[in-house]
Image (cartoon, rainbow, N blue to C red; front, top):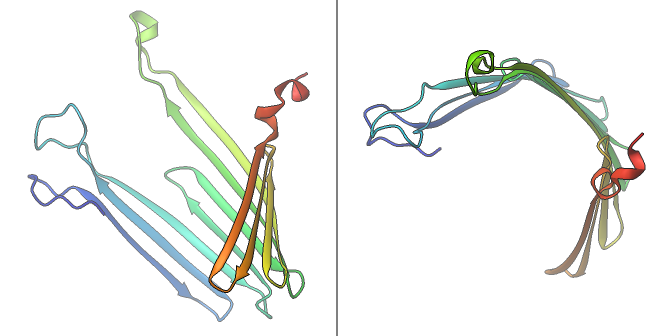
Amino acid sequence: MNPDFTSQSFQGVIVGSILQSITPRFALGLETSWQRQPFPGLQRGQTLPSETLTTFLAKLIGRNKDWIAAASLTPAAGTLNATFWKKLADKIEAGVSLELKGETAASVPQGPGLMAQPLITRVREGVATAGIKYEFRQSMFRAQIDSGGRLSAYLDRRILPSIGISFCGDIDHFKVCPLAYEG
């Protein structure tokens, strides 16, 4: 993506990925991305050092293909993503997702003396999301809620085979009613 062959060193993003079936129901894979981008403020032809990021993937499918569990781990970024999807009935599907992030972040040093030292903090975040999908004869309804209080809903209706109408709504309860969740 965004290749630049005109500079002294190659700039852009290169991504390679593979997902290999180990058994008919279990697959392992990895994805590696490499990037080098120009940075505003540097002289022409200067770039920041290149960055490489590798993600490990695993996927397991149920015997009747009515559920799928998948996970991805990116050690350099400190992220773990795990998902589970299940077909509950002929027209009903549900899924859950868990995203965990744990990394060390350093702030830019400011001021003289002790204030000139970068402040190193540990960042730990996690979001769990649950969603459901129901298919009617000529429409589809999807809804999800996450641990941050965000609720989303989507309705897609087919009026004619080539014409459809969609309605969606999204509300973040913690941002709308902050006083209700304090103390």
